[in-house]
Amino acid sequence: MHIEPGLVNEAKIVLSYATAVGAFGYLGKEAWLSIKERGAVSVAARSLLATLLVFCFFEVLPHQAVGASEVHLILGSTLFLILGSVPAAIGLAMGLLIQGVFFAQFDLPQYGMNVTTLLVPLFAMAAISSKVINRETAYVDIKYAQALRLSLTYQGGIIAWVAFWAFYGQGFGVGNLSSVASFSVAYLSVVLIEPVVDLAILAAAKTASKFKDSSLLNTRLFNA
Image (cartoon, rainbow, N blue to C red):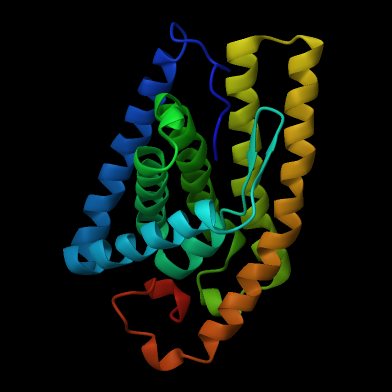
């Protein structure tokens, strides 16, 4: 996820520092609760795995600049279901940072915007997951409609944040409206793909139920 350089000028970009601090503050609170529940080793191991996966999503999977940002197959809901919300969030933040430091230094000034755009929708998806997925349902048993709702929440949140940064930085001129619309339409294709990927990975995970107590997996993956 890369907000185009210059979309928000230096004077206005200060807001992204505040939103990033807020996102990291919330992540810190959730991480502490997760460590108390599963232990630091489990959280660290899943976060490392998430970071490696996110880096691959950014660098290996196809991506295309469209309008105000880039279209990536980020698979946020997949990371959430398999690894949990905290490791997924840490993986997204660290994968984005590693890519910026080593491969796309021009993106570093936009890090606050990009990390906010990725993390806040993830937290929203985690919050609504209990309403979408019954407590008696393990994640490996979810249906397409449930996976779709999670994906719509996450990817829809990303579209909303990209639109916010674009309008905040450039206003509501015709060219900017067209840029946001182009990105939004292109990014909706991810919503069609991600639930299918989720179900395929969950089906594969279901055959490996002997690992249900692994510290590398989300406890809800096999356990309701």
